[in-house]
Structures are given as C-alpha cells and as structure tokens.
Image 1 (tube, rainbow, N blue to C red):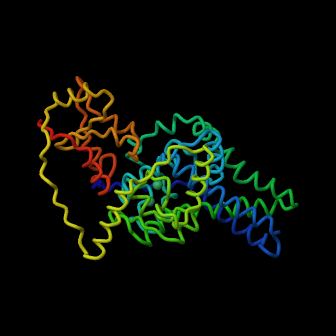
Image 2: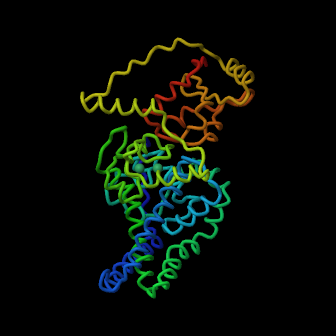
Image 3: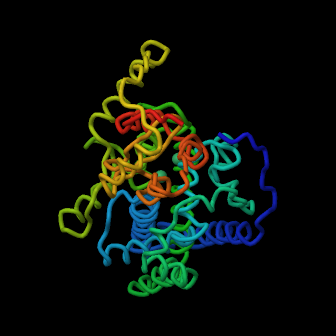
Length: 398
Ligand SMILES: [Zn+2]
Ligand SMILES: [Zn+2]
C-alpha cells in the first residue's frame, strides 16, 4: 500500500453542477408529476424498467464484461450492453472512465491515494463525494486498457458518448411515454428520477458494500456483502466474494445468491451469445471459506508453515534453457523464485497481456515482477498469493 499522502482537492465544477442539477430537476419534477395522482401506471413501470435495464448495462456490461473480462460476448450483446450502459449516465466504458477507474479500485482497494472511491475516506466520500473532485489518478497509466481500446463497440461508444447517453437516457423514455400520451411524465420519471436510482444504486457498491455486511471470503479489505445490496444493484450483493475473486462472472458463487445479472449471463451463454465464463476454482473457494471460518471461530488465522523449498535452483541461463525448450511459456521472477504462470494466463484478473509483459525472455534484459506483484501494480490478496505457490518451479540463484 502506498505511503503517499497526496490528495486531489480541486473541485470538478462541471461534474458537480451536472450531478447536482439532475438531482434538483428530478426532485422538482417528481413533486409536480406525483406518482398515483398525476402519473399513469405505464410511466411508473417504464421508470422501473429503465432503471433495471440501465443497471444491467452497468453490472453485466461495464462491470463484469468490460472491467473484469469475466466472460466474452458476441457483437450484438456488446452493442446492447453498451447502449444500456450509456443510459446509466456514468461515463463511457473507455479511457480514464468507469472501467479503468474500477480496475484501479480493485488493484488498490481502500488505499486513500490510489483507490478512486476509497471506503477508508468515509461513507459519503465513497458513495458520491469523490464525484465532486477532479481526479488525479497517479497510477491510471499503469492500468491495462488494450482490451478496451481494441473493441470497436467501446471505441464507438466513447466517441459518441454524450449523444448516446442523452438519447438512451432521456429521449427514448420520453418517446415511449408518447405511446400513452404522457411524454412529460415519462421524461421526469423514466429520464430524471430513474437516473437517480441508477446512480445511487450503483454507488452503493462503492459505499454500502464497503461499509456494512458479511465477510465470508476475506477480511483483507473493507468489501462486504448484503442481500439488500443484491436487491438494489441487479445482483452485486456479494461484494466480498467479488473482491476475493474478481474474475468470476457471478457476484456470488452459490445458486441462492440473489443475482439477476448472473441469470441473464447464464441465459445468454445457453444461447451461445456469451462464451468463456470464468469462475473461481472450487478448491480456492473452499480454502477461502474455511480460512475465514477458522479465523471467526478461533480469533486468529490458521497457522501456515511455509514448507522449505526443496525443488531446483536456477540461474538465468537455466531459465533461458527452459523457455527455449518450451516456447510460449510465461516465466516470471518474483523475489527469489521463478514461476511458470502459463496455466494461469486465462485466469489472471489483470489479464494475460500484463503477465506476458514480465515474462523472462532469453537475451533480453530481465524485468522482474516483484514490484508489480507486491503492490506496485496491484495489492494482491492472500488467495492470489496462495495460488501463486502452485506455479513456483525454481529458486532464483542471482
Ligand atoms: Zn469489480
Ligand atoms: Zn469494491
């Protein structure tokens, strides 16, 4: 974790003004077009559906697909998710925006400097306080983004983000309201009020999910889980599970975890529109749960005696021989050991390309992964560190 105390303090006036104005307009509109007395039922149903659909654009699209690469989606699914996500009015998928910011949040969770909405800075700040300050993300450039930039849907959405957001967020609900002669009510409820619902329910994942609830999988950070959160966020209720295993396509691993986003992804998968669902290994899930149960029962973590290394010891020349004998393998150096992380490439939450950057290459300068692994690029969890032990193949004799 960083020891820097630098804090961004510049007010982001344009963001703050827009955010505040929508709140005022929504409250005034809702007072004038009151539900039951002045708003027909179809308009209220529309507002609910717009809220839910935009929410799925954020949870399934922005979050699980684009921020975490938890699955792959065919073009029509990506187009629909990008359109729905635009209606969430939270910025485009790409570049210094929602997904990259969220990747920073996972890499440096709770760090008051590098986590964009660090829960350690208070409930209000993590919920919406951060929106009012011009961000200064020192480590944003270290976050991988090639996958986002190579997706034409992401590029198109970014280029035309403002008209897309206005169209799907305000124009479409208003046009739909014309079907039952209530365009103004549809604008207020399907446009303004549902925008507040989308915003604040999404923001709960940064605030409530790091403030109240259970920690069955890890207590290394402030992430927690509650049923209320799942109900309000399209299923993002098991945030503690999500922080422990962020590459998993589900918010919670069990069938009883309330997670409509998971059910939709599963249905799309059954139709062949979604592929490559990534999940935590049963073994790792069981180990995490047992670790936490032991800690809860005994008040201390289970003892873990690291067995002394009895395997081979290599110099760099032996590492080069290994790579040349097995081309394509991804061998990295972390502290005093070589790790062959090839089997982990598809599982790595930060992506395969990032691991490949640190791969040992014969006749090229060695780029060690120690700094990146030990907090430079990511504060790796206990589970991730444990998983790494599976790939240790030799001690490094420098
Ligand atoms: Zn996440
Ligand atoms: Zn979080």
